[in-house]
Amino acid sequence: MSDLAQQHDLTLRQDYFADPSAWNALVDLLQDTFSIDINLQASFGGPDPSSMPSGYFDADGRCVANFSAFSMPMIINGRSVKAAGYQSGAVRPEWRGRGLYRDLMQRTFARTKAEGYELDLLLTDKPALYERYGFRALPQHVFIAQTAKPQQSGQTARQLSLETPDDVRLIKTLLQSRQPVSARFAVTRQTEMFLLNAGFNTAIRLTALGDDTVIAWTFDGATFWLLDVVGTTMPSLAAILSALDLEPDRIEICFSPDRLDCEVSLEPYEGYTMLMARGKAADDIAGPILLSPMAEF
Ligand SMILES: CC(C)(COP(=O)(O)OP(=O)(O)OC[C@H]1O[C@@H](n2cnc3c(N)ncnc32)[C@H](O)[C@@H]1OP(=O)(O)O)[C@@H](O)C(=O)NCCC(=O)NCCS
Image 1: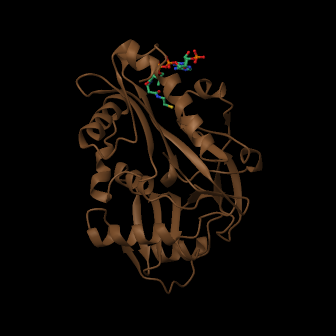
Image 2: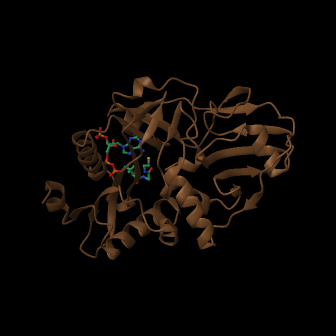
């Protein structure tokens, strides 16, 4: 038993997702803290099997504090990197200021270090919390593309729905076999966060081009945001726009567009959270970069 658990009459539990009551207690903690419902994942096949949650639970089975790591393999400047993402960090208000979060962070960081992760990534609105553990903010940029000339498209575009099991199956298959969207900075394998992000934001459209590529995008009538391209090959930006039959006034690409065959200019990305990194592979990250919103965690 940990000292903190003993002191506060709590139980420390790790890797507890197989226990439905403990999973539901985490769902409640994240709902109460961030107003998000991660139970949405149930309809897509459940949480990421690589997840390494650590939490403190009270005598009633409530999860009062949690911090999780998960495996998030990346490609950075052409090299495969064993990276860990950190998420689901929260402490119930009445339990704050007692070192529970410090304890969970330290346990989790020790674990991923022992397992040989060479890059640690997180998204936060509280960078000071992580700077003391060696995390540094990575500036991100959005990529503004020249509006491309429409091309003749041989592709059929089909709108997908997360409510349709066959569509979810197609997306999952492509997420498993995809080429990373960028060779400079991208996740190579991430299924659960992609589906969860798509489920959270109903403005995100998922469109299949043929049966080997899915485009994640949004459009407000003037600006087109290209969020991700999931496929075994990478169509050009012009081919994507033609297949979607769009001629937007402005195009924002929300990932490093090195594989997209287009000219871009940069604008600083001003998100609500900051991307932070540490570890020996962190020095290899040379900007400009942007983590696809579909890989946000
Ligand atoms: C942020 C949060 C997890 C801290 O939990 P906590 O149990 O009070 O934290 P601890 O008592 O373990 O403190 C850990 C350290 O973080 C520091 N800290 C706490 N809140 C902080 C904040 N908002 N900003 C910067 N540092 C903070 C503490 O001073 C302490 O520093 P130390 O280790 O040098 O002494 C909690 O306030 C919370 O759940 N907030 C809402 C959700 C959230 O923001 N989660 C983090 C998402 S990235």
